[in-house]
Amino acid sequence: DPVVHIEQLSADALSSELKSLEAQYADLAQRKLALDLTRGKPGTEQVSLSDALDGILDRHYLAENGTDVRNYGGLDGLPEAKRLFAPVLGVPEAELIIGGNSSLTLMYTVIDFALSVGLRGPESAWGNDDTVKILCPVPGYDRHFALCEHLGIEMVPVPMLDTGPDMNAVEKLVKEDSSIRGIWCVPRFSNPTGCVYSDETVARLAALGKLASECFLVMYDNAYAVHALHENAPALANIREYCEREGTLDNVFQFGSTSKITFAGAGVAFASSSEANLKAFKQHLGFQSIGPDKVNQLRHVKLLRDAEGLQAHMQQHAALLRPRFKAVLETLEAQLTGTGMGDWLTPEGGYFISFTTRPGLAKEVVRLASGIGVALTPAGATYPYGEDPEDSNIRLAPSYPSLEDVKATAEAFVVCVKLASLRQLKGATS
Ligand code: PMP
View 1 (cartoon, rainbow, N blue to C red):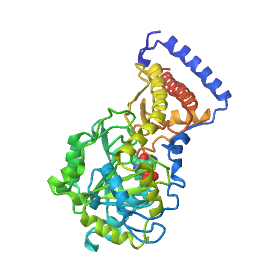
View 2 (cartoon, protein in one colour):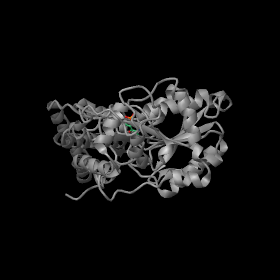
View 3 (cartoon, rainbow, N blue to C red):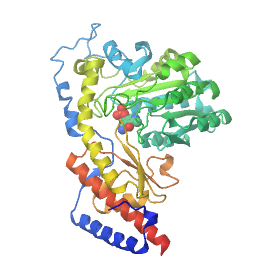
View 4 (cartoon, rainbow, N blue to C red):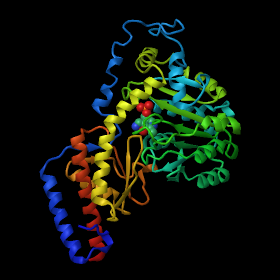
């Protein structure tokens, strides 16, 4: 059958389509599905790729420099771990610290430090002002937003384009409003749109420090730095090189982790900024920890070894992820292309597919899906305060379920999208 755009359906066709979808939906409800596409968790086969971490040290606990990793000390991490992870962020080893198991913890600590203690001493604390704001490209990562809300930081949404945040909007806001102290970025395979920031966007982000208020921070969360789905996926420009040229190294903090490389929640996280920022930050860290888990750092060095080892490891992840993404995308393409019932982006890496419903339907689609045992990320989660002004964005995360379950979920999702769209149209026309 030729594809008909939803707005071109005759009244009869609309009624019969709707009837058929109601029947499909009822049929799905009978099947007692228990499917979950909510969070970007690596699948079991993916985490199993790193099972060799267990016992890999074979009771050899000495780092290169003779440090016994079983004992206290070394707040900024092992030198060999820095050598392994510095290229992931494209920074010199001297500008990297290796932390514990979570980059989110490092991000929280950086924000809390800038807010309450001050990157350049008490006078510079953001919190000295009544209002502190951070720019949030939307749709974006819900945990960045929750962190801000928790710390009483006001979030200012800015549109996310295919090239990254809308830099015209960002620059204008930053120039006009000195209470804006930072911006969240997931620069490669953004969560959730999957876009890779263009070179121009990266260059303009690097220059923001010159336009903005003092101690402005680009929170550059490169969580998916090496998480391409195929070899030709777009590269990301090196923000540090631009910062060096602009004299803004103090205005960027970069983050990464192995949560989606080895074990989620039991990997190694790292952060980079100027030497001055890191010095101040380490002093702050010293109050909360005597040092990170160096045993795990050494285990990671033994497993991944070097840039080539890391790349080979990531290719194995990609091989497991590709069919899951393909299953969702093929279903969306086959069932929804040209129908006007939704749009989506085809990511070349990362963990998500960002889906846009007709305005006002995201919550309804999530509700319908939940009614037949398909759990989706709550609508609105990708916006500050959970408020999607259009109520249209849904984040799909196909990594965790089995391929069979991903396929079943995608089919069920499409039924929910169509049902919600046709009911809305019918309501509008009847
Ligand atoms: N940043 C982004 C953009 C993420 O998607 C995630 C994981 N979902 C994290 C950070 C969390 O990283 P970690 O496990 O290192 O705290």
